Length: 143
Image 1 (tube, rainbow, N blue to C red):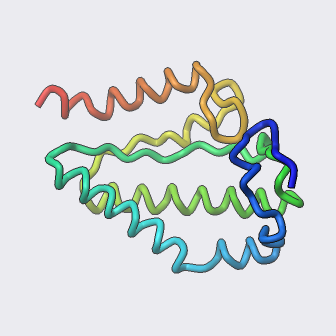
Image 2 (cartoon, rainbow, N blue to C red; image 1 turned 90 degrees about the vertical axis):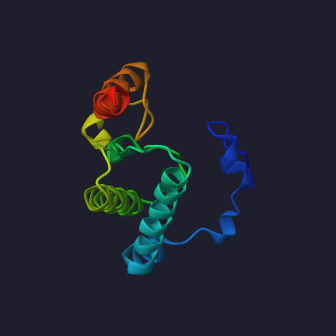
Image 3 (cartoon, one colour; image 1 turned 90 degrees about the horizontal axis):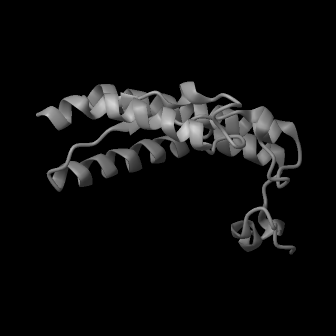
């Protein structure tokens, strides 16, 4: 394999194990995978609260038109990732409502002027998210 200079972590991928677009779609549709995400998030909340700390949850941004690792075979794969991001965000929202956790809608920052690429904030995006987080925790800090 060749190391991707953009992200050295991709140099660890065993490309012969990479699923096809059809396999990715099938895996993404598997409900038990979404259940695992929610269960993991629930465990994280329990750990934080168990330590006596407060927690804030946030949805994540995603701009599929800016996805460009070069690792996916086609845009169908990117559509699958976008659908997973939407489902993860929905799970995060649901858990925040159920457990009465402040929620920051970071996905509203899915704009070209706030992201370097598909989901990583640039400086302006970091400031925008920071302001949203500050607003979400204001009542916790004042308490």
